[in-house]
View 1 (cartoon, rainbow, N blue to C red):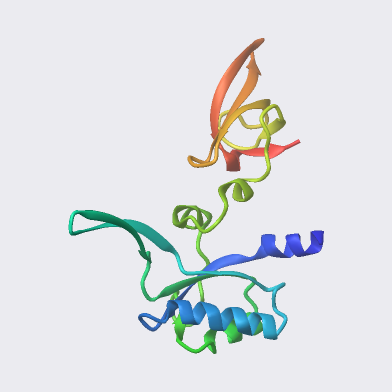
View 2 (spheres, rainbow, N blue to C red):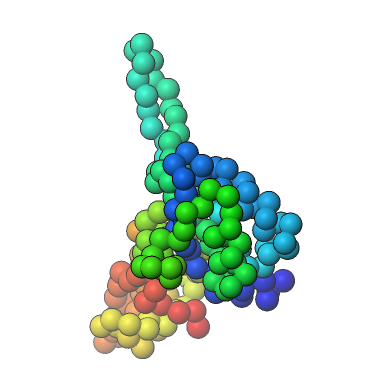
Length: 179
């Protein structure tokens, strides 16, 4: 089980271009192909990002959903020849987003901005009261205790001891490591 988690940690998010209006069909077809070819350990997640909006009609408000990026599907996968072939040969897919034929994975910041990754899972399972080491910035190599966390902002408040006094420091999650 832990090997599967390690494999998923190596996976990256890629953007796939589809025919307009075929996003959900592409998602369904790709999920079926992944299952049929037993590739769940290579292709982990397929999403069509949606957003809610309020439509006013006849003085009534109705919450509806629409595609955030029409003609695009997001896929979390480990890029190899087999996964590339499966995606490229899914009906309705026109190609990967990237220069030429080389797919480019989304950066961590882009993944968080799109909201496709669970922020708590993305930043690690830290807990208030846990000791951590600061790995970058002006407080590098300091050890401190987590006082609070904001997964939405990607920030953590750590208490470090400086000159015999406890000092509160706000850091990004990528600036700390579990001890």
